[in-house]
Structures are given as C-alpha cells and as structure tokens.
Length: 238
Image (cartoon, rainbow, N blue to C red; front, side, top):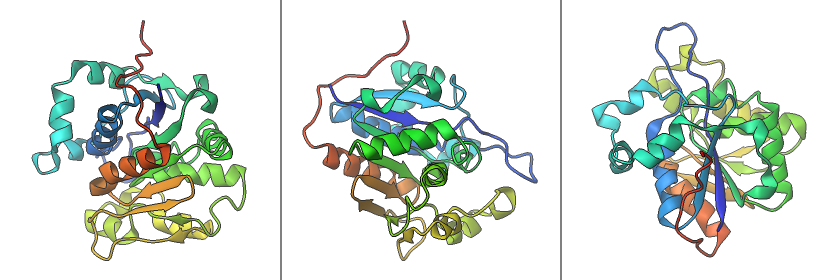
C-alpha cells in the first residue's frame, strides 16, 4: 500500500495580536480525503506531536467545505489528527510522498525545523513527490538552508504577498512567503486573480497557492505517484 506522510504545523501564536493561527482546516481535509479516496494510506505528523492547533478563522461558516463537514463526522480521522506523530520518529524510506498543508503556522515552526527540512531533501533525493499548499511551502525555506540553491530556478507558488495584504495579517507574521521564496531564487508564479486556485509542478515538487488549491495540489501529487494504492489508512495508534 502506498503511503503519504502529511506534516502539520504545531505553531499557533501570531505577532502583535491575541489572534491565533495553526493549520488551515480545509488545507488538511481536502488533501487528506483526496489521498484516502484514491486508495493511499495517510500518516499524520507534526514537530511536537499530538493535536495540532487549528486556525479559528478556518472554522468560520464562510470557510467550511464539504471535506470539513466530512472530517467533523469522521471519528477515525479526528483521532488521527489528535494524535499526530513527532517528526523525529519518521524517515522518508517508509513513505511514497510528503505533503504540507498550510495555515500561517508553518511560517514559524516548519520554516525553521531541521528535521522537516531534511525530510524534504530525503524525499526529493529519492525521487519521491513533495507537495505543499498555501503557507506549507514555508517548509522549503529550511530545506533550502540545508541545501543552498535547492529552489534556484524552481517553479513554485504559495500564498502571495497580495493575498497576505487582502487577508489583513501582514502585521502579524514574520515575513511574506512569496518574497522569501523569491529571495531563495525560486521562479514564483501565481494566479492572476487572488484567492483562485493555482498549482505549480516542477519535477517532483508540487506547490499550491491558497486554500482553493489544496485539493488540486493533492491530485497533482497523486498523478505523480501514478497507480492507485489499496484503500486504507495507516493508524499509528495501538
């Protein structure tokens, strides 16, 4: 059975505000069910393990998606989400693909996490797909620090500077992800209209721009993986 490792942020605090962040729920649920419904096993992990924080804004009525509702009614998925494994217990050899959902949290922890950065390098070196959506591509920053030049000339996308401005959170984050990726030499592309779906694939690296791109990003990873796996979920709990 083919297995996908999904890495979620453990960070919830923003700057200059009492508002919280974390995983953008739909950016987890959309890819999660894309993988499950296409027969892939999914393992969830995070830097500190346990239940990741969820961005409260992603639970508001205007952001609720069909996959969010499905997750709400899925006790098995909820149990896995509440008990993510710690990153330092996992290696690339046991998985076929790596995926990073967004939410603003990765700007802090995954962008600086050496274990995550090395996982990305190990997957890419093994010719295994790495997917990331919205702020998930922040994890590429640490990978690029460990392997300078990694992103030079790579076609990527992520939550744009314009989308940050329109979301009114630029004063609460440490940097704009689009600018950070460009500084690392990435060939950054985005949809002409903010908050519309956009996916870039460069070799085995797949990146999605924003929440609407979460499902399409996962489907692009699945396309790279080729044949469907056997239906099922890897449950790391006893």
